[in-house]
Length: 131
Image 1: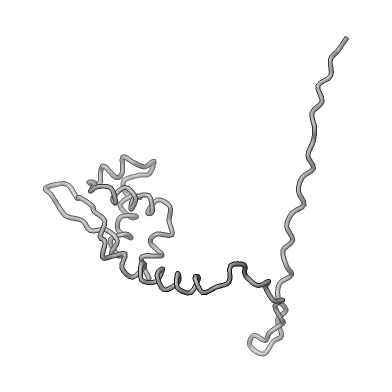
Image 2 (image 1 turned 30 degrees about the horizontal axis):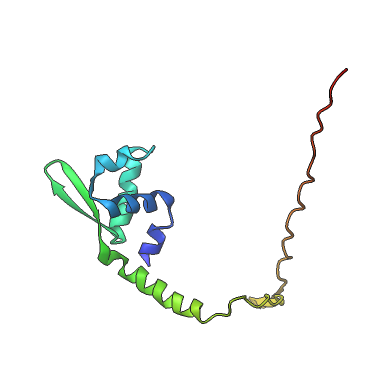
């Protein structure tokens, strides 16, 4: 699912959000970001390859627009997942401990659980007046 991989980057998500409102020329997209034109060009290429945007050439300009059909696969997957999530209980059951397993004939222990860091103590600032 190329669309999900393409949308994993915040810059590409922001480009999609811009293009969802209106079409933009490549130079106009570059002006919206603090990135170089080649960097934005790479992001646009990935979005095109994933089928999420389309481009048309108008003279020297390349005008980009969202391709709604490019989101069909992602939308269908999210819809299927929503059906699964809706069937889950409101509060999930506690996770079961992971048991040791074998990998290539060797016994492997599960990693130790990660402990949350201790909260830092709160300090109170007391203002004192000098006589």
